[in-house]
Length: 103
Image (cartoon, rainbow, N blue to C red; front, side, top):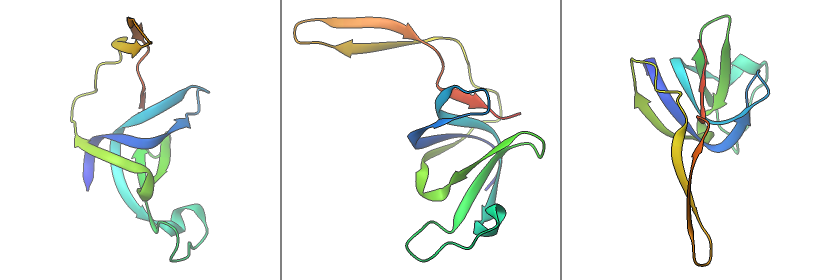
């Protein structure tokens, strides 16, 4: 898998800008566990996705990838409509983007 993808993760992660995200977008390269300088055992993931450029990238463990969507164009980073349901009320609001752009 190479090219630009929108990678959705199972858990939140903190990006270099200090914000939390649930997805990352950029060039993806699949790498083995030697990228971090250690060898994982059979109970751990043994591959990782490097998302971004050589100068600015994040490494996501293969076991944390929930979806990988081929996406050549940068996704919208505008606030998105979201909702939350309480006992008797539906709250609709805008939230910041959850996508980290690694370019």
